[in-house]
Length: 132
Ligand code: FES
Image (tube, rainbow, N blue to C red; front, side, top):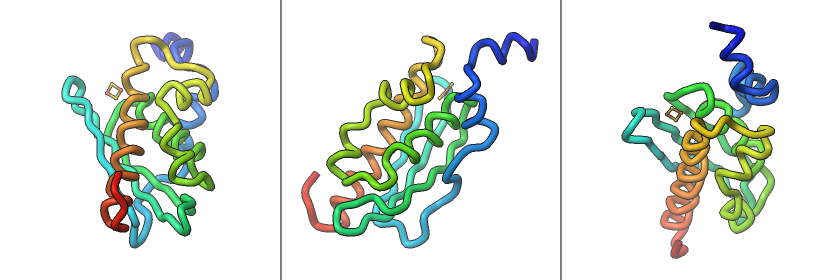
């Protein structure tokens, strides 16, 4: 069945699953956001370091499926170096597209990445006295 699993995910997804980027938690994070899927029980947490409105560092911890790990990894790569406003424009579809696509049954996993990112930005804005 292993061969079948490899056909479900493309090479890029498998690469981000096997070698996830930016795993962990940013020290002295300016914003932390969590998202979970009540159906599968998977959870994603994203932490941000923001300087002058720019995301300088971002890390994730994900207890979840391979697609959730790959989308977590990709969303960190997509938003690092972006302004907070630009990062808010990153949708789950953009994350899935950057991975070269996800199987339709796994698209919901990419929603965790978008929601965790938005929650982390909300948290950053709250803590820095800005309104979300
Ligand atoms: Fe739960 Fe993928 S199955 S996030």
